[in-house]
Length: 525
Image 1 (spheres, rainbow, N blue to C red):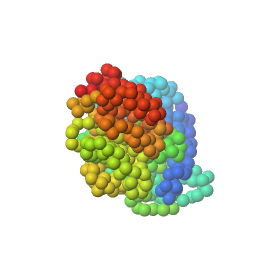
Image 2: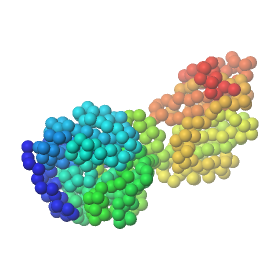
Image 3: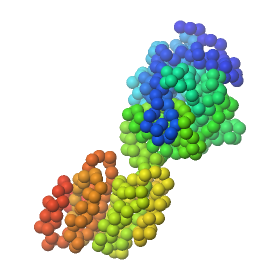
Image 4: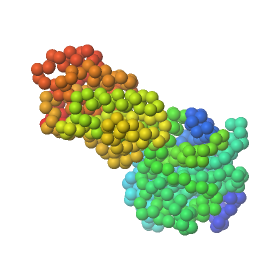
């Protein structure tokens, strides 16, 4: 076991950090991750996008590089006492893996908001998990108390020169790998920022070796402590941080990482939740891998950078820094990805509560400028004798179309609210349309499986008898070949045989739910 080397001097220069990085001990546990072109995204953006695949590391994150480098430089006495860290998850796995490799005890303090997948992974690596607080900063304060009480050595997730140098090996690999891709060109590297360890390591190497390459830091718009600190000229503590990107949810950045970022980072960009969800989908399209929100920040920023600068023919690298995603979160990501890319627009539309108005509205959709649109969502419940209020989702052909679509509906006599960027609609109202209605007399409730193709709903409406009325309709596109639709139809009892003939002629699979207790509890008057 090597003896502990002297501590690095204060205010290390990029050249000093380059030396530390060149001698970093990371490959006992880490792999040299691939640098891959994102072909589909590059075509769309008219710029070359390269993905640094840190999501492929043994713990599915870059964090084991810095963690192990720090552990490998501890003295035998320090290792014998054991180590402790505070982490939202990825650094924790790195420390747990490194401690297991070096045969030392590891206590890991994690926020209570940490995804279960990360907690389970740390335990599987032999780490002793302690859950405390709602954010990294809360967990950090508790870890400091435990460090003193138990005589452990603290392994900081970002504010330590050895940790920073370990993360810097990513930049060394990238610069080397550019040659194997047949090009030396690199205009900018986009790096997610939580506490700043990753961007500090990358910036020191890039500015020491290729100072002309821009280093661009990326933060969530609700967790932008580094960006605010640099703007203020001093470290700023955020009162709260958003937790969607839990890997970057840091209230206070490090002293050393702040110094480095202020001196070496060329620019900062913030992105929102919808943009990150869209970026997760973009990465999946090119790699068939699913990264966590923090892992997609860099790609979201590249898209924003290109849209604002109108660049073409440049080369950008994005570090996919982690892939520890809770499976249960994928539903939310899939919902918001379409809105983040503005591939889907949402509207609240008022139509007359009269026979044929539903059909006229569908004809208005079919006549929208730019060609036909697929209906992605449709929710309606009868509630008024004069007007029907429907919640509608439509595919779009590009950004900025929702306003034009809303204006077209208005011209056709359908008052419309554009809800595309309304968080209340996105997160709640879309799931709450419905309920009991005293107007829903003679209602029969059916679940249908419609073929997912244009005209399927129109066929349904065309075969209906004029005397029947749709009193409830709910549909949400799930990305399959067939759509599942819930329909309430007001059918007089005397039309029972005719209704059965209608169902047989329609030919769509269905289940009648009129006697379902759930329907009686929540929908039937």
